[in-house]
Image (cartoon, rainbow, N blue to C red; front, top):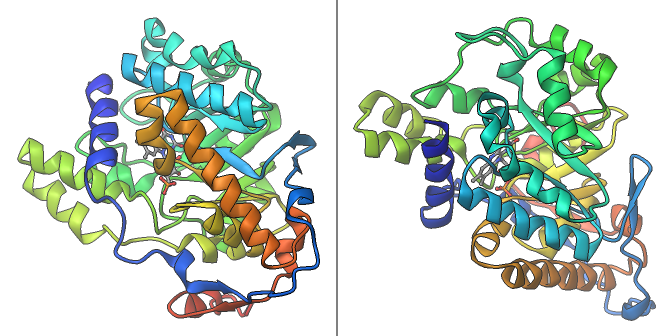
Amino acid sequence: MIENRKEEHINIAESRVVSPDHNFWDDIKFVHQAVPEIDFDRIDTAIKFLNIKTDFPILISSMTGGTERAREINRNLARAAETFGIGMGVGSMRAAVEKKELSDTFSVINEYKIRYKIANIGAPQLIDQEKKGFDNKKIDYVFDLIGANFLAVHFNFLQEMVQPEGDHNSRGVMKRLQEVAASYPVIVKETGNGFSREAANMFRDAGVKAIDVGGLGGTSFAAIEYYRAEKAGDREKMDSGRTFWDWGIPSPASIRYCNVGLPVIGSGGLRNGLDLARSIAMGAEMGGFARTLLSSADKSYEDVEREIKQIIRDLKIAMFLTSSGKVNDLRKAGKIIMEPLKSWLSLYGDE
Ligand SMILES: Cc1cc2nc3c(=O)[nH]c(=O)nc-3n(C[C@H](O)[C@H](O)[C@H](O)COP(=O)(O)O)c2cc1C
């Protein structure tokens, strides 16, 4: 069941339209600096994230594991993470907990020297559903399996609502998250619907180390589940998938909402190096890419390498043309925010 689901997610994400109509990164326009007065070849793209240095402000977001094909995708992504000196996450490791024989589809990334590795479990698995919630022994298992530096806990409650086999309970999640965050360095992440300030404040108080916004604008799991439901002839889930296709907080707005004193990863709909520059300009430490890297990682290592090289090149062009010699300088770069993003930014009286 898990194997089929993972495989279907990959197939749908690669071949169908799974994004909302609007990409909110397009609502951010940098002010062009015709006289950059910096040397393109001396632009410094290195950053420190929670005390770990990476050569670029790029995270390969959590995507997959649990099948043969996923193993090869993880292998190609891991090799690219080593080449570029960046961090990476793997997909939900529930599959490895439930079927130990699938473990190597995740641990394959240990063949490479990666600046930091992020294990991944779902918030719904923190508490009892029809199955018992993960105890610390299970979390230890997934953490050690890939020699992780961080534990991502993904919040995907919209997906749980629209998928046939979804978990319905969220009561007690924060209490358990707080316990888990006392034992592991936790990064919370959404999977395409973003976090509000209320959520961000709860996460800070629970002791998590960083927030990955995973906002609206890129992969929509309501859309992915819509196609799965269509194939399964499940009319009810199909209708919900279509209704909630565009649900969520736009990624750039969520970066602002999550400005509560923790490092923020900007993700959800990043297509290229310009979007990456925009995410940093909004306040993120770095950007996370998922679907943009998926089909190349499914083809070959060389394809992922080319894709990431292009992202880096375009990031550097955006830095050059905004006179940003260092990644952090992007925060000071002049920019215009257009509608509809502009209205989202006024929610907490921030803008
Ligand atoms: C095929 C696919 C599988 C994914 N699986 C997971 C997962 O297992 N765990 C997780 O935390 N996020 C998962 N994600 C979500 C991504 O990490 C990311 O938050 C989301 O796709 C938004 O980024 P994007 O618009 O760049 O794709 C998955 C995304 C894709 C495309």
